[in-house]
Length: 207
Image (cartoon, rainbow, N blue to C red; front, side, top):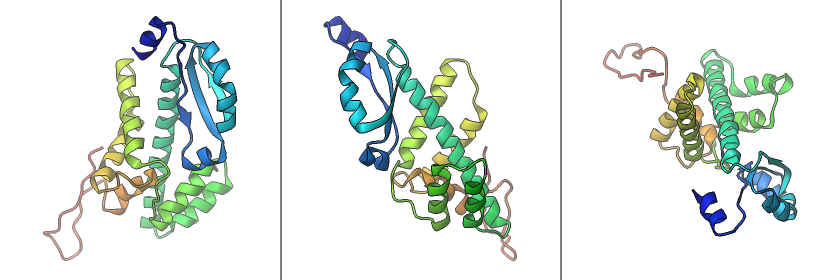
């Protein structure tokens, strides 16, 4: 709608959502995901190059840049939810989150996100680089897009529920690594009561 309105007035339209948060922005290493008028991209190139390390163009159809961002953030959100599950399992099994992150960063799954967010989960400290409420919003939008396209995404749908749970625990404005709190605060597959306390309530996973 916006692109049509701009073009109807004789203007050029370019969308350029980014992949990257606070530190990449400060470092000038954002990734721009663009679609719209190629001429507008040519005019913006110098500015985008000053702020980012890469610019990708997906053609003249407005909205494709946003769709790419949703796909990227869907993968990121689901990956971090899986990391939170791994941390929960390791800690419940007598290991530590630091133990797990060390192994992950030494193997094929190594990534800056695993290293940084794994440390945050281990410390249970979540200074916001990408607020959890925004990560959950992007998952919701991505799932809505998939539904419109007739595509089921069960893994991402399950991850979305974990972010919603963490939001309900008061972590909306914390970094999205706080999805780990969905487990740290008692999320488990089957209800159990504490030994000697048959009246204790436990939280049951809803999938």
